[in-house]
Length: 307
Ligand code: BYC
Image (cartoon, rainbow, N blue to C red; front, side):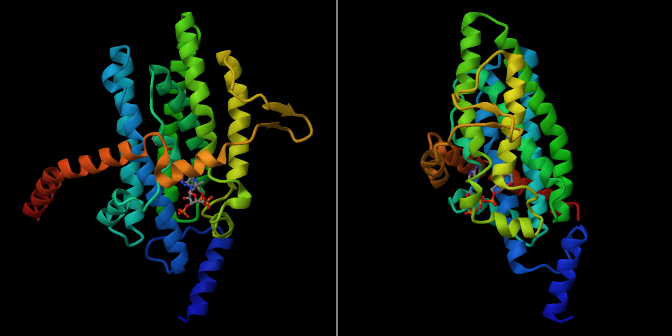
């Protein structure tokens, strides 16, 4: 088939909501965009294990520890589904991981902030997983088949994560004066970085237009951010806490909450590698990779022996 014919076929599949599968012809740029986004997503899942993993040994009860352990393991699983989806596009897992370690590939800005108290674990579950769900429910309908299917399972697990985070904060919000303060303080610190998870404003988003045409993305960064604000502004009422934004107000005409301006300088600073924990996070991932070499070797030798 001619290149023109292949492009026409591809375009028709996108128009008719037929998923693109690994062996289908696809434009090079479509493949590259998916590799970029899926690998960044995979990296975010495994780097995201670090701030929460930091609290496994200090969870306040055995039950809390067991729940947190399960959640952090879920994130590793999400990373695995996504690295596998990425491999179907013709890049090896090693290449993808090397790009993370060399600093070439990005991962979500949110994981470059520290977890200072137990309430941060609640705030991450509620706000960070909450933001992730809003973004990922959209991605269950993304046009690349393996990515869409990975998202279905991930979203189910994220819903549980969000509820466990909210429940941690609910308990703290009904506790002692110190616990209430801890809860409010965690919300204050995680609110704005959570809004940044959706990426730059639409006007400054370099990839959105093309990704929307290819139906990789179905909603813009600002649309998803607004959905998130509308959801959280209601949920926080149950906690009896406040979001740290004096401009947050229901807008009758728009049928949405208005909210204040994000500190974009801070966002880009973190994305460029200068956030509070960027160095610590990458160092931890590189160390884990080096120390896990014998496990990879043993697994490969075992697989070879069973052939
Ligand atoms: N942080 O053109 P734009 C989780 C980059 S993990 C860092 O709008 P796009 C969880 C962007 O990559 C949640 N960089 O980009 C895990 C681009 O740079 P490049 C992770 C960001 O791709 C453990 C540039 O800025 N979720 O759920 O159209 C525990 C311009 O942006 C960020 C995903 O990864 C950021 N926040 O849209 C708990 C979802 N935002 O690549 C929870 C999948 C933007 O051109 N990803 N950049 O050099 C997406 O949906 C999209 O990639 C984004 C950005 C909406 C994030």
